[in-house]
Length: 291
Image (cartoon, rainbow, N blue to C red):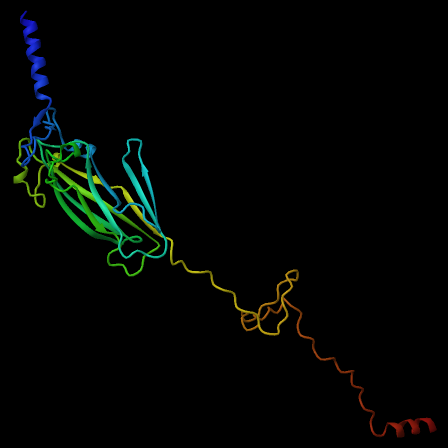
Protein backbone atom coordinates (compact mmCIF):
# COMPACT_ATOMS: atom_id res chain seq x y z
CA UNK A 1 0.00 0.00 0.00
CA UNK A 2 2.78 2.40 0.93
CA UNK A 3 4.52 1.54 -2.32
CA UNK A 4 1.42 2.44 -4.35
CA UNK A 5 1.07 5.77 -2.57
CA UNK A 6 4.74 6.57 -3.17
CA UNK A 7 4.47 5.76 -6.89
CA UNK A 8 1.33 7.88 -7.21
CA UNK A 9 3.02 10.87 -5.60
CA UNK A 10 6.06 10.43 -7.84
CA UNK A 11 3.96 10.33 -11.04
CA UNK A 12 1.97 13.39 -9.99
CA UNK A 13 5.17 15.27 -9.24
CA UNK A 14 6.57 14.54 -12.71
CA UNK A 15 3.39 15.52 -14.53
CA UNK A 16 3.14 18.75 -12.56
CA UNK A 17 6.68 19.86 -13.48
CA UNK A 18 6.54 19.19 -17.20
CA UNK A 19 4.84 22.37 -18.34
CA UNK A 20 3.14 25.47 -17.04
CA UNK A 21 0.66 27.74 -18.77
CA UNK A 22 0.92 31.51 -18.61
CA UNK A 23 -2.42 33.26 -18.99
CA UNK A 24 -2.40 36.46 -21.01
CA UNK A 25 -4.57 39.27 -19.56
CA UNK A 26 -7.66 39.97 -21.68
CA UNK A 27 -7.26 42.70 -24.24
CA UNK A 28 -9.26 45.88 -23.80
CA UNK A 29 -12.87 45.16 -24.68
CA UNK A 30 -12.12 41.58 -25.62
CA UNK A 31 -12.10 38.09 -24.23
CA UNK A 32 -9.09 36.41 -22.65
CA UNK A 33 -6.67 34.93 -25.17
CA UNK A 34 -5.57 31.32 -25.07
CA UNK A 35 -2.89 30.40 -22.56
CA UNK A 36 0.68 30.31 -23.94
CA UNK A 37 2.65 27.20 -22.93
CA UNK A 38 6.13 27.96 -21.65
CA UNK A 39 8.79 25.29 -21.25
CA UNK A 40 10.14 25.32 -17.70
CA UNK A 41 13.50 23.63 -18.38
CA UNK A 42 12.84 20.74 -16.02
CA UNK A 43 15.81 18.90 -17.54
CA UNK A 44 19.29 20.35 -17.34
CA UNK A 45 20.07 22.56 -20.35
CA UNK A 46 23.45 23.83 -21.44
CA UNK A 47 24.99 25.82 -24.28
CA UNK A 48 24.98 22.71 -26.45
CA UNK A 49 21.17 22.84 -26.46
CA UNK A 50 21.34 26.42 -27.74
CA UNK A 51 23.68 25.43 -30.57
CA UNK A 52 21.42 22.50 -31.49
CA UNK A 53 18.06 24.29 -31.28
CA UNK A 54 18.88 27.73 -32.72
CA UNK A 55 19.65 28.20 -36.42
CA UNK A 56 21.31 31.37 -37.73
CA UNK A 57 19.86 31.76 -41.23
CA UNK A 58 20.58 34.21 -44.06
CA UNK A 59 17.94 34.57 -46.78
CA UNK A 60 16.93 37.10 -49.42
CA UNK A 61 14.49 39.40 -47.63
CA UNK A 62 12.25 40.08 -50.62
CA UNK A 63 12.14 36.50 -51.85
CA UNK A 64 12.54 35.72 -55.58
CA UNK A 65 12.40 38.81 -57.82
CA UNK A 66 12.85 39.35 -61.58
CA UNK A 67 16.49 39.31 -62.58
CA UNK A 68 17.59 37.36 -59.48
CA UNK A 69 17.60 33.57 -59.44
CA UNK A 70 17.58 32.01 -55.94
CA UNK A 71 18.76 28.50 -55.11
CA UNK A 72 18.45 27.09 -51.57
CA UNK A 73 19.95 23.85 -50.26
CA UNK A 74 18.58 22.32 -47.04
CA UNK A 75 19.53 19.31 -44.96
CA UNK A 76 17.30 16.31 -44.30
CA UNK A 77 16.14 18.11 -41.14
CA UNK A 78 15.32 21.22 -43.19
CA UNK A 79 18.27 23.19 -41.84
CA UNK A 80 19.33 25.82 -44.39
CA UNK A 81 22.82 24.91 -45.66
CA UNK A 82 23.37 27.48 -48.41
CA UNK A 83 21.74 30.14 -50.57
CA UNK A 84 23.04 31.11 -54.01
CA UNK A 85 21.84 34.19 -55.88
CA UNK A 86 22.54 34.72 -59.57
CA UNK A 87 21.97 38.35 -60.60
CA UNK A 88 21.61 39.48 -64.21
CA UNK A 89 21.35 43.00 -65.58
CA UNK A 90 20.05 45.47 -64.63
CA UNK A 91 22.12 45.56 -61.45
CA UNK A 92 19.94 46.22 -58.36
CA UNK A 93 20.59 49.38 -56.36
CA UNK A 94 20.09 47.47 -53.06
CA UNK A 95 20.12 43.83 -52.02
CA UNK A 96 18.63 43.27 -48.55
CA UNK A 97 19.50 40.08 -46.70
CA UNK A 98 17.45 38.88 -43.72
CA UNK A 99 19.46 37.52 -40.78
CA UNK A 100 17.21 35.44 -38.51
CA UNK A 101 17.61 33.43 -35.31
CA UNK A 102 15.15 30.56 -35.76
CA UNK A 103 14.74 28.51 -32.59
CA UNK A 104 12.69 25.40 -31.95
CA UNK A 105 12.58 26.11 -28.22
CA UNK A 106 12.74 28.88 -25.63
CA UNK A 107 15.09 29.33 -22.68
CA UNK A 108 13.10 30.67 -19.70
CA UNK A 109 15.25 29.24 -16.92
CA UNK A 110 18.65 30.15 -18.40
CA UNK A 111 18.44 33.21 -20.72
CA UNK A 112 21.13 33.51 -23.39
CA UNK A 113 22.99 36.64 -24.52
CA UNK A 114 23.72 36.79 -28.27
CA UNK A 115 26.39 38.88 -30.04
CA UNK A 116 26.41 38.46 -33.82
CA UNK A 117 28.19 39.85 -36.88
CA UNK A 118 27.61 39.73 -40.65
CA UNK A 119 30.55 39.81 -43.06
CA UNK A 120 31.16 40.30 -46.79
CA UNK A 121 34.04 38.61 -48.63
CA UNK A 122 35.14 39.62 -52.14
CA UNK A 123 38.07 37.47 -53.16
CA UNK A 124 40.64 36.22 -50.70
CA UNK A 125 41.81 38.28 -47.73
CA UNK A 126 39.04 40.87 -48.15
CA UNK A 127 36.64 40.16 -45.27
CA UNK A 128 34.74 43.21 -44.03
CA UNK A 129 32.03 43.61 -41.40
CA UNK A 130 28.62 44.77 -42.66
CA UNK A 131 26.50 44.51 -39.51
CA UNK A 132 26.65 43.67 -35.81
CA UNK A 133 23.56 42.70 -33.78
CA UNK A 134 22.63 41.97 -30.15
CA UNK A 135 19.70 40.14 -28.58
CA UNK A 136 18.61 37.77 -25.79
CA UNK A 137 17.05 34.32 -25.99
CA UNK A 138 14.53 33.88 -23.18
CA UNK A 139 11.08 32.45 -22.41
CA UNK A 140 9.58 33.99 -25.57
CA UNK A 141 12.17 33.05 -28.17
CA UNK A 142 10.46 30.20 -30.03
CA UNK A 143 7.57 31.11 -32.37
CA UNK A 144 5.05 29.20 -30.26
CA UNK A 145 6.10 31.26 -27.21
CA UNK A 146 6.20 34.72 -28.76
CA UNK A 147 4.14 37.42 -27.12
CA UNK A 148 0.81 38.22 -28.74
CA UNK A 149 1.65 41.89 -29.23
CA UNK A 150 4.91 41.06 -31.01
CA UNK A 151 7.08 42.55 -28.30
CA UNK A 152 10.15 40.87 -26.95
CA UNK A 153 13.76 40.66 -27.98
CA UNK A 154 14.35 40.86 -31.76
CA UNK A 155 15.03 37.65 -33.63
CA UNK A 156 15.44 39.14 -37.13
CA UNK A 157 17.82 41.73 -38.60
CA UNK A 158 18.52 43.05 -42.11
CA UNK A 159 21.53 44.30 -44.05
CA UNK A 160 22.18 45.59 -47.57
CA UNK A 161 24.69 43.12 -49.01
CA UNK A 162 25.94 45.46 -51.76
CA UNK A 163 26.19 48.68 -49.75
CA UNK A 164 29.16 50.82 -50.70
CA UNK A 165 29.91 48.96 -53.96
CA UNK A 166 30.13 51.03 -57.12
CA UNK A 167 30.39 47.94 -59.31
CA UNK A 168 29.30 44.42 -58.55
CA UNK A 169 32.12 41.85 -58.49
CA UNK A 170 31.71 38.56 -60.31
CA UNK A 171 31.09 36.79 -57.00
CA UNK A 172 31.00 37.53 -53.28
CA UNK A 173 30.14 35.68 -50.07
CA UNK A 174 27.96 36.89 -47.17
CA UNK A 175 28.43 35.05 -43.88
CA UNK A 176 27.34 35.42 -40.26
CA UNK A 177 28.48 34.18 -36.85
CA UNK A 178 27.12 34.70 -33.35
CA UNK A 179 28.48 34.09 -29.88
CA UNK A 180 25.94 32.70 -27.40
CA UNK A 181 26.50 33.05 -23.63
CA UNK A 182 24.16 31.14 -21.32
CA UNK A 183 23.35 32.61 -17.90
CA UNK A 184 22.92 30.66 -14.64
CA UNK A 185 19.54 29.17 -13.78
CA UNK A 186 17.03 31.74 -12.56
CA UNK A 187 18.72 34.80 -14.11
CA UNK A 188 16.38 37.68 -14.90
CA UNK A 189 16.77 38.59 -18.62
CA UNK A 190 16.36 42.27 -17.68
CA UNK A 191 19.72 42.12 -15.90
CA UNK A 192 21.60 40.89 -18.98
CA UNK A 193 23.41 43.32 -21.30
CA UNK A 194 24.24 41.23 -24.38
CA UNK A 195 26.95 43.68 -25.44
CA UNK A 196 29.09 42.97 -22.37
CA UNK A 197 27.73 39.81 -20.75
CA UNK A 198 30.31 37.07 -20.11
CA UNK A 199 30.32 33.66 -18.47
CA UNK A 200 32.48 30.56 -18.18
CA UNK A 201 33.83 28.77 -21.28
CA UNK A 202 31.46 25.87 -20.54
CA UNK A 203 28.50 28.25 -20.96
CA UNK A 204 29.82 29.96 -24.10
CA UNK A 205 29.22 28.67 -27.61
CA UNK A 206 28.91 29.78 -31.24
CA UNK A 207 26.37 29.78 -34.04
CA UNK A 208 27.48 29.73 -37.69
CA UNK A 209 25.09 30.92 -40.38
CA UNK A 210 24.56 29.32 -43.76
CA UNK A 211 26.67 30.39 -46.73
CA UNK A 212 25.06 33.15 -48.81
CA UNK A 213 26.75 33.37 -52.21
CA UNK A 214 26.02 36.19 -54.71
CA UNK A 215 27.05 35.70 -58.34
CA UNK A 216 26.80 38.53 -60.87
CA UNK A 217 26.18 37.29 -64.41
CA UNK A 218 25.68 40.70 -66.04
CA UNK A 219 28.31 43.04 -67.45
CA UNK A 220 30.64 40.33 -68.69
CA UNK A 221 33.43 41.38 -71.07
CA UNK A 222 32.93 40.41 -74.74
CA UNK A 223 35.56 38.36 -76.57
CA UNK A 224 38.14 40.55 -78.39
CA UNK A 225 37.55 41.04 -82.13
CA UNK A 226 40.17 39.92 -84.65
CA UNK A 227 41.84 42.71 -86.66
CA UNK A 228 40.33 43.43 -90.08
CA UNK A 229 42.36 42.21 -93.10
CA UNK A 230 44.46 44.72 -95.03
CA UNK A 231 42.45 46.22 -97.93
CA UNK A 232 43.36 44.54 -101.23
CA UNK A 233 45.12 41.61 -99.59
CA UNK A 234 44.01 38.18 -100.89
CA UNK A 235 41.92 36.09 -98.56
CA UNK A 236 43.81 33.32 -96.84
CA UNK A 237 43.23 29.80 -98.11
CA UNK A 238 42.40 27.60 -95.10
CA UNK A 239 43.96 24.57 -96.84
CA UNK A 240 47.35 26.22 -97.24
CA UNK A 241 50.12 26.08 -94.69
CA UNK A 242 50.25 29.06 -92.39
CA UNK A 243 52.13 32.01 -93.75
CA UNK A 244 55.57 32.84 -92.42
CA UNK A 245 55.53 35.32 -89.58
CA UNK A 246 56.04 38.95 -90.30
CA UNK A 247 59.74 39.77 -90.36
CA UNK A 248 59.12 42.76 -88.12
CA UNK A 249 57.62 40.46 -85.48
CA UNK A 250 60.08 37.61 -85.89
CA UNK A 251 62.85 37.27 -83.31
CA UNK A 252 66.35 38.38 -84.42
CA UNK A 253 68.31 35.73 -86.29
CA UNK A 254 71.17 34.05 -84.48
CA UNK A 255 74.41 33.54 -86.44
CA UNK A 256 75.02 29.78 -86.94
CA UNK A 257 78.13 28.20 -85.48
CA UNK A 258 81.14 27.73 -87.75
CA UNK A 259 80.73 23.94 -87.84
CA UNK A 260 76.94 23.98 -88.07
CA UNK A 261 76.56 25.35 -91.60
CA UNK A 262 78.70 25.45 -94.75
CA UNK A 263 81.10 28.36 -94.85
CA UNK A 264 80.60 31.11 -97.34
CA UNK A 265 82.02 30.24 -100.77
CA UNK A 266 85.54 31.62 -101.19
CA UNK A 267 86.45 33.45 -104.41
CA UNK A 268 87.72 31.21 -107.25
CA UNK A 269 91.47 30.60 -107.06
CA UNK A 270 93.51 32.33 -109.72
CA UNK A 271 95.43 30.01 -112.19
CA UNK A 272 99.06 29.44 -111.27
CA UNK A 273 101.24 32.21 -112.53
CA UNK A 274 103.87 31.14 -115.13
CA UNK A 275 107.22 32.78 -114.50
CA UNK A 276 108.17 35.20 -117.22
CA UNK A 277 111.04 34.18 -119.50
CA UNK A 278 114.20 36.20 -119.15
CA UNK A 279 114.64 38.96 -121.65
CA UNK A 280 117.62 37.27 -123.41
CA UNK A 281 115.94 33.80 -123.60
CA UNK A 282 115.41 34.03 -127.35
CA UNK A 283 119.00 35.08 -127.94
CA UNK A 284 120.28 32.18 -125.86
CA UNK A 285 118.28 29.68 -127.91
CA UNK A 286 119.61 31.20 -131.12
CA UNK A 287 123.19 31.01 -129.97
CA UNK A 288 122.73 27.38 -128.95
CA UNK A 289 121.32 26.49 -132.33
CA UNK A 290 124.24 27.91 -134.29
CA UNK A 291 126.85 26.09 -132.29
